[in-house]
Image (cartoon, rainbow, N blue to C red):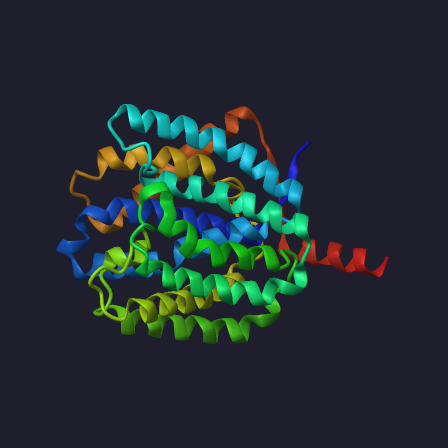
Length: 312
């Protein structure tokens, strides 16, 4: 059976995975170019927060969380075992694998959340999770080991996804979305000189960084505003490339060793963007050999189905 995916979310996920690949491609050159540094800062201010939000958004019940955990845990263990054989500390998820490890923890917490069913506490727990993420920077034991820092810091985005309805008609809020996007861009510009780029990874504590608590809260605000902007302005129609965003996990896993090997060769940033697109397309085409797993419906069609179901 072919599962259906909504075009607006597929388009957004495709944009985000492109930014993941492109960001990793230019990573070694950002200190040699102000343009690349600016691009890198913008990308890392929102691309993973939005990805984490979408991860939570598509988990609607306890069974979804359990299924996600069963799907990602073996993948993480296999990939991390390979990394350990190359000399990586087994306690520290290797590079991009932190996302798989943290998602497993979030999915387990999501299963508990749905099990308890205390939805009235949601809007109390969400700000508390934001506060916990900001306080986490002061706790030295929350660092890259076991992805402790990222798991705590990015959890509010995941929890916000659990609380939102994936069938929301985001297009209705486009005016508010453009205002949110403008405020977020101003925030990124204002923080450009005051925040080390490594701070945007949220992989470790504040160290000697002054005003770390305020800066992390500012990052939360920027991430939330950019997420809202993208949700309201991502096209809901189906493009020829839309289906490539239906399942981005193969691209996420496969691009890392490829980019890690090739990015040592000097390539202009425009070339890196082109190579990122080509790599995503190649992995997508190879992934199709196992058969089409997902179909894509336009946002307008999905909204009509929702209205009809509500009127029944």
